[in-house]
Length: 300
Ligand SMILES: Nc1ncnc2c1ncn2[C@@H]1O[C@H](COP(=O)(O)OP(=O)(O)OP(=O)(O)O)[C@@H](O)[C@H]1O
Image 1 (tube, rainbow, N blue to C red):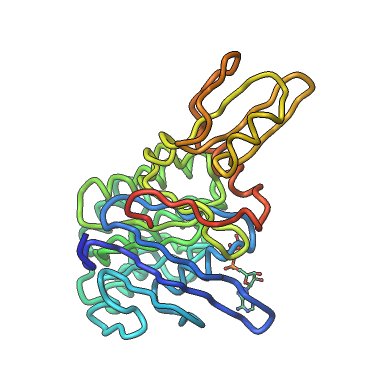
Image 2 (cartoon, rainbow, N blue to C red):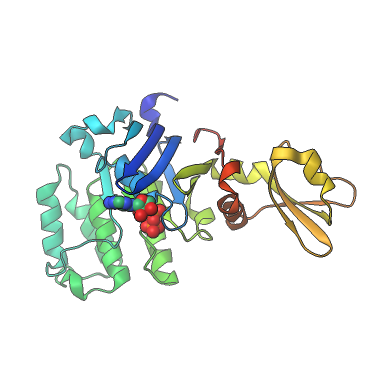
């Protein structure tokens, strides 16, 4: 892949705030096109990584490249290609939706007002309502319509669905996927709602305590891992070594989550595919001394 084919590349990126490190040695190469989910618990460093990606923060060490260019040397033209929706969908609450659209047009070089109006009409959101009187889900949709009308090549969203109920979350993700299917935009969003990601995202990055612990094409990551269930034992663990991501023991059974190339299923053991949520949780539970990043495909 050429540099321009990557939506985001970070090389050895660390970020230190006054009280300590928020990110340590993050190296990622995320391809353009599709949806990339950034997952991790509270305080993992997701917002910090997203703010670095859109040039709102500078790294303490390392480099950040967005759409093939060093983001710290961004020009207004480069920044026009990046959309950012911060946590809690900030809108001017006293503005009507129409006024928000006018404001968006005044601030952005290639703002597509008709596109925004079409999206909002489809969702039944009236243009004459003040933003502050809309429901949380409607406010999120207005913020998304504004961000998409900017026609960004990379749209970065920080926890866009965290405060939405399941129905609003579903509608929001539908609109997002529709925009990606129409072509042209790469979406990078953070979330701690893991179970819906399988339906939505193409690439996954798991961040824990400021470090990337898993990154890659989602289908490849799922194919590279499996669960082995067998009689309670520790023997398999000795043979499997670092291929075992996690071992869980009940009174009678041992369940191993293993990476490709790990132990073949021994007699009496059953191999099963792993669900995305279980995969993510296993990597989040790994002790940090075992935390070297596992990467797959382009998300090196
Ligand atoms: N402006 C700041 N000044 C000092 N420390 C900060 C600042 N912003 C974040 N941090 C710290 O950096 C670490 C990572 O925070 P960050 O907000 O990036 O995590 P997060 O994964 O987005 O968390 P959450 O899911 O709770 O939003 C945390 O320990 C946090 O306290």
